Image (cartoon, rainbow, N blue to C red; front, side):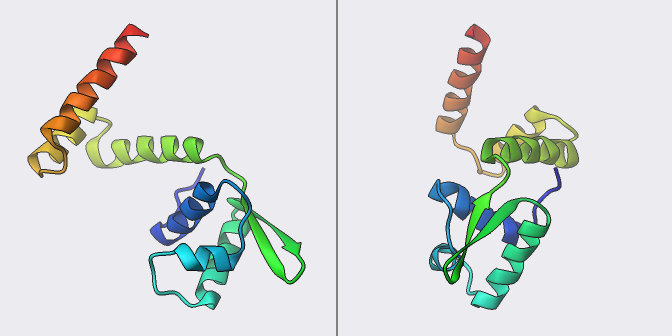
Length: 121
């Protein structure tokens, strides 16, 4: 699965969160960028061409549906990020977040609990 650019990822996250097929107007109302409808339609067209989205005509509107699973994509993207940036070291990632104040002691406690639960599964 290919990695999505940030702009396309932002679009598909909106669609995944909707839990149903959506129109471009729906996306345009929720996007955090100042895009024209033409820009959005171009990006939606790319996502369809790359088989990330399906598109069906509903009256005068196109309706977009995700063709890939959110959890599957995020799992692969997270793994790819860890490999590319931290040479597959989770410890280096957590240390970087902690040293850069991107993770709090509460976050570490939550991570510790998560690890303990997974070890007991």
